[in-house]
Image 1 (cartoon, rainbow, N blue to C red):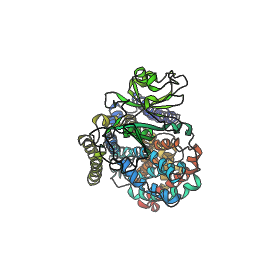
Image 2: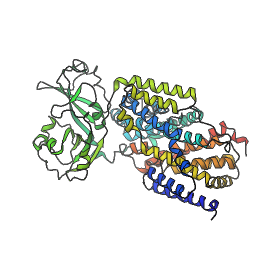
Image 3: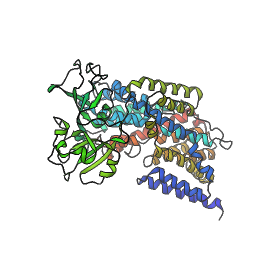
Length: 596
């Protein structure tokens, strides 16, 4: 059979199958990689073309930016920004403005995921202090971060994926296609962000209900009590609580100091710390994990520090009703010897557990923060002793490098703006983060999300298959015909298809699949391809109507106590606003109203 006849059908079947599998929760990286292998074995594209996407400039840039983002997060720069930006307002709407506007600006230059990761516990704590339901603030914060990512080319990894797709597609057959500049999307992104944030501020009080998190019974146990000792002669010995920056911690409170058998409750900011003081903190597990990396603070004597030992990690485990040590203290039961692990903190129904860790009598449902070897997870994941076991990252927190990390980020942005390319500045910034001590080389390696890079590389290969098989041209012809030959209608159709796919599959995959269709549609309409490229770019970020549409949506889904319907009620209008604003700005910027 003539390849011209069967290849488009094969590629189309591969894409439909991949989309269906990803929508059902299958791993996007393996799904797209499998699809790429199928079209390569079938001869739709040859092996060099199939693997060329894995050396794409956009993919390498994303990998480098993962390291840059890790350096920013590891030095606490985002946390410092969060503490500075969270300001109370007069009423819910001014409070939302104080939250959403800065988050939009920050996310234009920093990766979305670490911002939401840091801001989620900070926003919950902020909402509690201001007397607001967390559900009123978390979703607006998350959506504001997403909107901010559309302002610059480094705002999201998806922007860089589309940029890489453009660079790989530039040839004589696609006139008008050019590399995307650092601020080239800004004239569209800023109006979208302004309109979107206004909607977030004014619609949230009416459309977002006051939700109690569905995991509330399991959320309280994450409010831990941890005991940390001031190292004698260390950097905190002799400093006041305020000088040690232990007074206003996000999601964490210093509730007591034990000194030579005496107890000092609710110490003030001017209280001086002494070596061998035991500080008792209560707060969120993520903050306790970070606090343990503070120079001059060591675990209580009963749980000596091993966090820098090779292979050690922080683990969260819930005690089951089959736990053999129920009714015994941690010390009496011999937890360390039995599991080769140290209990760092214990949480129980939000109650602060008094006394030393070793004296706590364990009960079913207690949540333990444990420091153990990585093999602890494999040994006990199926054990009847625990209901749930999950690993937690143990950061090598380096706040003293925050200024250096910020300087590296600013230099990278300036270099990218001047050169018009992101790859070299991003690689240089990644190397500088490690060389100047903002994070360790091991942390730099683990910060690179291999699954996302596989999605990008495989997606780039599949986009070549869509183009070479003729499937893209056929669909482009159909879209143009559906729009009655109108360029604006065709542009809107490309945006709609991308945004629809984005609600159910990862953004990078949606962009890679629809990109060749967008180019083919532009060629069929004999139009400038750049507005069609930008339609894919912006639509790939417009995932507000479902919790599964974007990774950051899932991050606030449980903590906010949201239901699926909350995303539809609050996010679907924002999807429509994004659609209308983006198409309007593209039509205006490229003068498409003068064309047919």
